[in-house]
Length: 233
Image 1: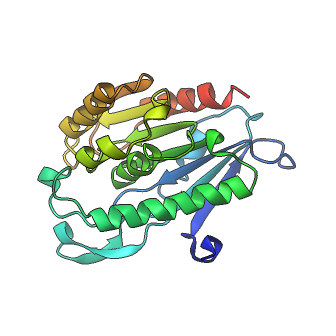
Image 2: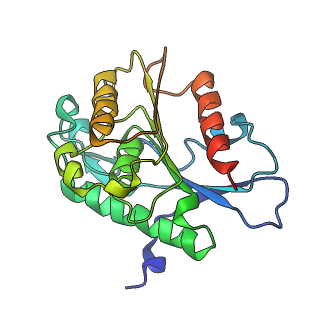
């Protein structure tokens, strides 16, 4: 089957002054539950990335589906959420794996456009963060890094058997608000500890005095993380 025909629809922004040069890095950034592809577009100028970096930002729209915790109301969601109190246990495995496949198709499209997987960063907020872990830890080729915001690792037990153990040096940025009422910071801490127990050596853990959101300090830290990765040409 030709995966080009049913790609997720995306908003794309190319950063860098020289628009004639092809992007050398791509960031695929997944939104949170009920949001859409435009949610993190305003963050890009706030990152204040150097103009000599050619980076393509790809913001995919999740499919619309009924969400159990929201009274089956249809909204953009990477997978169904059955109960927030037990995100790592009560999971929609079918939805998670289907969205993983859809994100992998976007990675292949970047490959076809000249950006190898080693120069692709997966980023995500909340549910999108879960997708960054779900997809990034299983990637056959090593990604440039993961940016994991206000989220958690779903299916930790299955991921322990499925993650790619040859990529333990992949840089992983984790950010979480200290008073997040939606995804308790304990879920972020559990993921951080899981990564350490699996042997991931380049995990950054950042907390911010905020709720389920991003703030300027976090944006500045994400920028530093991106610059450290994209500066190594």
